[in-house]
Each structure stands twice: as C-alpha cells, then as structure tokens.
Image (cartoon, protein in one colour):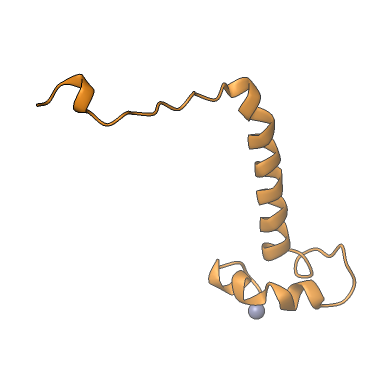
Length: 70
Ligand SMILES: [Zn+2]
C-alpha cells in the first residue's frame, strides 16, 4: 500500500534568489555590527553618548563576550 496516493503530500519551498536576499543580509550585518559596537566599545574605548547609561546597560554582556572593560 505504498503507492503515490497514500503518501503524505510534500511541500517544496521556493528558493530565495541571492539578488533579493542580499540587501537584507547587508542590513542585518550592519545591525549586528552596531550591536557589537554598543556592547563592546561604546562608553568604554569610544563614546558617542554622554554618561554611563549605555555602558551600565550592556555591562554584563560586555564581560560575557570577553571585551576589555575594567
Ligand atoms: Zn566591567
């Protein structure tokens, strides 16, 4: 009873062309780099914002990821 009529229907996903995905990949990469900057360097080696709010907000993540801090 293993005929084609008894098999479960299979779904096939359409491949996403690289030309359409590339801008989103670049955008995600920029967001990732921005996140790495804020966790790793902001209000430490460099500072865009005044004060220590960003530093304190990401402080545990900075230590967890091994960035130099104090
Ligand atoms: Zn620290």
